[in-house]
Length: 150
Image (cartoon, rainbow, N blue to C red):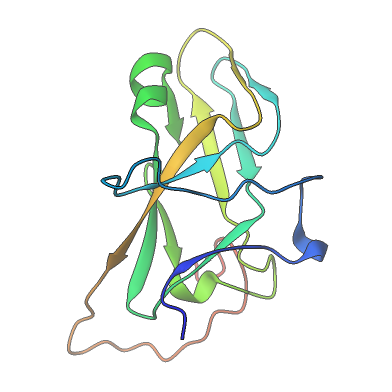
């Protein structure tokens, strides 16, 4: 049984052409898996863009993948994740709306446009275990992708 990892989304949900760049840890001491830019694009001043990575994550039911902006992008260039921290739930994997395609919604908060090149690091994902309360009351099943649980 597989514990956790990354896969390429199925062809019908892929947004990019060519090879998908899989997340990877840059050093053996890295907590995060770096998500790379799948294609070249410009991010204008105060502009937001949703970047679909064509990558999905599988994990155990009691785990979550948290996505954070790379520190250097935030500190040096004012690039942020619109939702601060992305939460990828275990049941997001292979959902019927987008096959679990992980999207990174980024925003340029600076006064200078920024150019991303294919292969540039954008974000990092960290797998974490979580706990549920004794009176957990949800038996619902995920039916969609981003925002499907309201």
